[in-house]
Image (cartoon, rainbow, N blue to C red; front, side):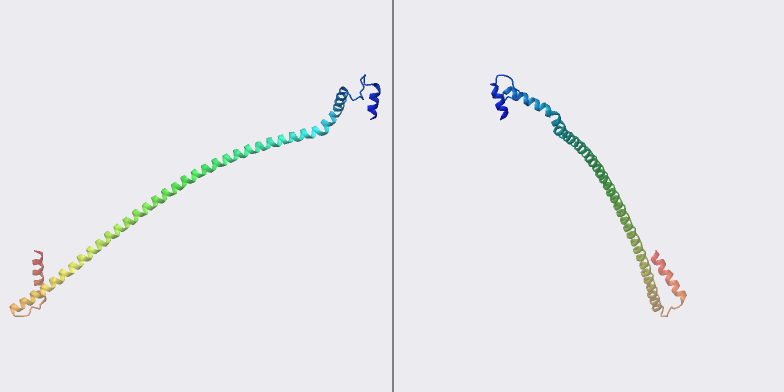
Amino acid sequence: MLIVLLTSADGGAAFSPLGMSAFANAFWTWVIFLACLPFVWKIVMGPVTAALVARDAEASEAVKLAEKASGDAEKARAEVEVKLGEAQAEAATVMAHARERAETREREIVEAAKSEATAMIASARTNIQAEQDKAIAAIRSEVVELSINAASQVLSRRVDSEDDRRLVTELVTEGAGA
């Protein structure tokens, strides 16, 4: 209030730095602003600027890390695709080998079955031939006995000698062969 009284005592005609005219207000505002500017810059703007620079650096670092992570993820995806392709190729190879082994085993089984069947057929033929030979021998023996009995009755005597049997056997064999 004292300042107001001092300025109004003059009548307000002259410039008074303590006066409250518009010019005086602007003048003192600029003087105070310029006097406080170094302190404000040092105390307020310095830390704010440093914080903004640090934030920009952190953001730049985060962007770099994100780009690196994206690149690493892309590399990992490419590696996974390559390994997947290799696994599919390996699976196809394994399947081809398994199929080939199965076909080989199938051929072996079929060939073994064929050879076993051939052996069984040969064995059966041999057995049939042996049985046939036995049957023919039995029939011949029976024919010899019947022939000897018939001849004995015709001759009214008994033919038992070994020579007679051999002779009749030869005659029956020659008759069967002819």
